[in-house]
Image 1 (cartoon, helix red, strand yellow):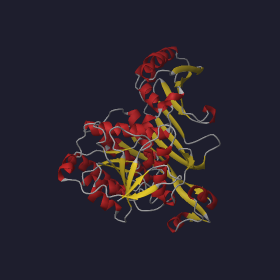
Image 2: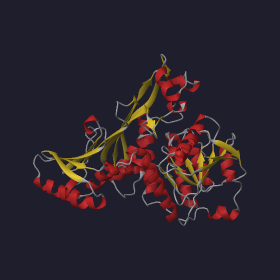
Image 3: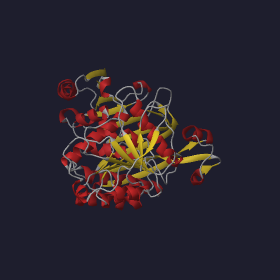
Image 4: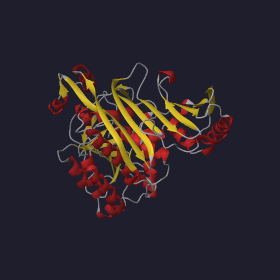
Length: 468
């Protein structure tokens, strides 16, 4: 095990030999899942951090988390990129972190982690090809797991994830995925308004052509993260390793559909009926590929997806399905690069019997998520009165500063202070804080595990339909 202390010295990361870690005692293993909220009692083991999301979990410090983090990974660019991000958090001028990292880079890194077990929570965010196996084996070993999405990318692997959840319950450990989008302010307010009957009414049933609830997410291969251009690993463009878009980013959208349409309701696989699925490619030229990976040519494993010199990535997908009889649609689109001043965008509609709740994030909104309320009836003074009271009196109690602004006849916007727009990266801290509370409680909410199972059933069955 090597230790990395992040210190400022000629701008470099200093590696020093360390004998830390090692075998935990039998007593420690037996009590590892019992958390009290004490300082530093959660000890993180980061497994093969190939995705920048692994670092974002550590963008903040947590009272309950020990400052020493154990990283088990193969040597290479993925690991070095992760360490550089942690180092940047430690060296930043405002609210610097103080992480110490001990690393193991042998080819048996996963087996070594399970043998040594210097921590009690495994964080995994990276190559998805064998992530489900990693999760299952970690749970079998009695380790808590905080996993980046997706936890599974193919229908064939889905039963392993179900088994992991079953074993987690038996062993008293918590398996949880990082659903950052539940912490985005317009989505929160859309959900809250949908629960107010004299404003929203009830959720329509919808149709395949006009679903009751729609979520669409647009992402970009070339982007900035923590103020720096993001370098993506070449395997990110291999759907055998990353997963197709329909099972990757769509995980967030399906999660939000469940979370908003059926808040607190325990769902089951029998509640899902896949209507249709489709997939299509984003095409990358060698020049585009080099800009985001720094590689001059496509690796051998990507040659299967190259046509006339252009890499075709099945990063786009759409699932049209019914959940408890309600028509829903989840779509993900990957473009190469965002327009100037723009970034990843989100579009969403919830159709109630009284009004529609619409989130837009286009040029007209200055690429900021904006929540609109559109009346179903042509003239509805009652709705306006109820809506004004719901926002300016009800929701303001929990979200001070928000305000209802009339845009046109029967169209309103919720004005939201910038203080609530903390950004995607900050949402990782919020999810981690919630997970830490669950560890302290010793359990997840009653509906979380069955609904995670339903979510991944929906995405993998959606892929199956798209491949037909």
